Image 1: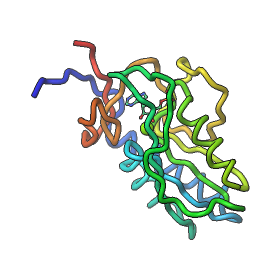
Image 2 (image 1 turned 180 degrees about the vertical axis):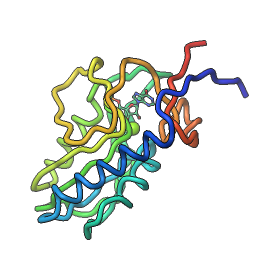
Image 3 (image 1 turned 90 degrees about the vertical axis):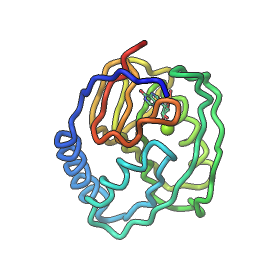
Length: 175
Ligand code: IMP
Ligand code: MG
């Protein structure tokens, strides 16, 4: 297996502190309307597990799988729902939990899909936001960290399916 060269940009303590803060904010903001939390597979699961343990509300949890047809580190712009066991969205307050917003194409597709299925309102929580890469106008309510244009791995984020288990967030260095 080839060696990956990466540089740590956010350590475990920094991530956990920020995630706890976000959990508190979500607990306050949704106190009158416990959300249906919708985790976007697969990259969000590490973040989601920590974030939602910091949310003190009777929320429910579902997952949805989205593929954005990425060749290596670039998006092709084509999006497809690959896995959808989520329940009815009618009248629900949806909180999407996603790993990273890059061009925004995936999130745009997903929010349209959820809105079409009757959601009352849709909020979005993300671990990383790369605003400089945006190609669509998407609304993000909760951002842990804004990052510059690079490719990130760890804490759920993968490069070709690997490196999700790194306990920190690292920037992948080009070979
Ligand atoms: P977008 O549709 O361009 O916003 O791409 C969003 C999806 O691309 C994310 O959900 C990730 O799965 C993937 N992605 C984008 N940038 C990165 C990165 O830096 N590291 C790992 N995955 C990424
Ligand atoms: Mg993703």
